[in-house]
Image 1 (cartoon, rainbow over the protein chains, first blue to last red):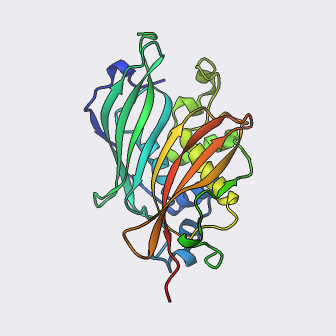
Image 2 (cartoon, chains in turn green, orange):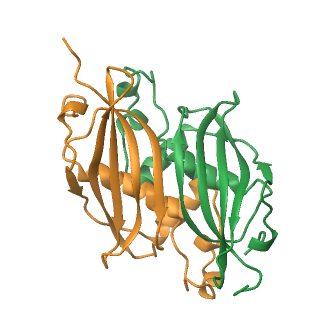
Image 3 (cartoon, rainbow over the protein chains, first blue to last red):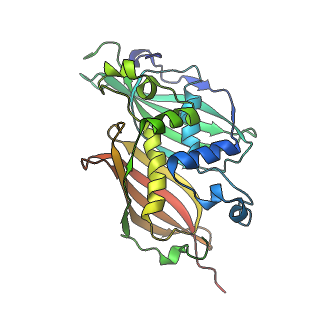
Length: 149
Length: 151
């Protein structure tokens, strides 16, 4: 496993990923994997007569793209488990949008005697207009260098 | 689809649905790694994972979240007149392994009027369990649903 151990993670650290342009193929692939063919994302003829005026990505594609971008920020940690999080979906993701993620390490919690400690991070998903599209507060169980410390 | 979808008024707190099962395969994990770009060894390196606390590769937590979305759509007899999916609170409680069969239970937890007259808020609770009945993921999702248009 590459990346920083729990002991090395610094509260307050900030990092930003490169961008990724969301394509029609991403929407189609997400539908294929999830099995969710919601008409707003999969049916252009339906979607263009809604207030969105065209297909938008399913909001859950955001966390999916974000998780990959997060691994390209330079803030790489040895994750043992993804424990959970809270997401707020503020805006649409459209075909052609270029997304990037800003990470901010908010908090660390040592779990004594456990093989990992909890790291709380804020993940902001930003588009090419610098709009905050989604924001998340996530909890990651990160491996300790010394087990039982 | 629009002719069968249900407006906010037609949705009742306490309604519950159980989805069919779906067996999570190695292909699902490989596809999800490709789509997300998350190639963490937890999901993609069988050799390293033999020596980990899991003993094998496990599915991305977010793959479970994606699959439950598709299962939920299959669980509900009639879709909602959804305008937006606005928020999510989610816990990944246990690993999903290759070969596990998961299903989702969906329940309407809460209904609230919104600030705009044409839409209301619905909170769904969703629980993902495996073939042994263990809850592997659970949480709540917020949706804005259209209200029946007044003529």
